[in-house]
Image (cartoon, rainbow, N blue to C red):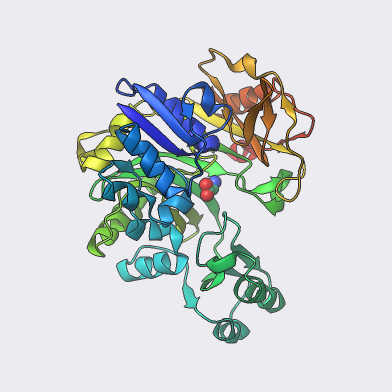
Length: 423
Ligand code: GLY
């Protein structure tokens, strides 16, 4: 089979590495890819929002399956466009990708179907939101309705901060059109867990739990980022919690979407908060998480292409997922200054140390090739993942492997997986 991935970050490199292992994957393409993906797939210089070019390329090359990985093209309907042209695509259609694309939609869905989540109100105007916030209790959470690179969530300690937040989101449009609507949500306390799942619209199969580290600096300080590191599994996600979520959150979400005429096929990423009253949904994503995919996929034993085809064909009930007992930790190597301003184009050395390794992987996020070298090309540059007998060993190995790679403005957090020590 000829398979094409749309995307070009660490998540897509992890997907590419796994698809490459598939017995049925004869040729692998990636648009646009990056310097690491180029070592295992044919990269084509097409952007993820260039729908016509993606469709024309896939038609010309007779691609058997297009895997759409990032949120923006999913929310904008790339899967629908490809299907209209007679192509097979993995990922939710536009009417289902709204699960991530509109926070107001997902909150209303959860309310309608009794799926546990924080109390909330949706607002279409800043005026109404401000009126509501006058008598709200604090802290409170403001969320831009649409996609905002994971940055459209503000936790406000008091009324003054909330007023400033409404201005930022709805009046100044800091997150663009994502701020046309806004969700105001009760603040939840507890531990966050990410759970990645596959669904064909009827059956849901859970991959594994993971935990991200969103802040730029150690001890969860600094600005919000796309994610600075992950570990999997989460020791806080117990069998009992899993059973509860299966019954009250995962299957009900898939069934609710089907009942709404929005059959969801692809990956649902459940962002959960393990609150004192039980697990609640913080957010849904309609795709693999990044860097969650970089710890979950290396642990997966199944043939990823077979699982993706089962999602598209509606035969996921025939598949049981299998994961290695080994744990995984991923540390993101970033460009110093990320997520604000940082320099690019720095030479990366030491990458050959990962060649042939079965327990240490270097997933490229923001890299490009130039003059026969690999250069930095983004804020998050590489994801260094290691497998270990347990989380502590995986973490030790991941941090050791981080020292194999060099570039002049290399930056990382030093406390990825610190929570493991609490167990
Ligand atoms: N790591 C969070 C996300 O992918 O949205």
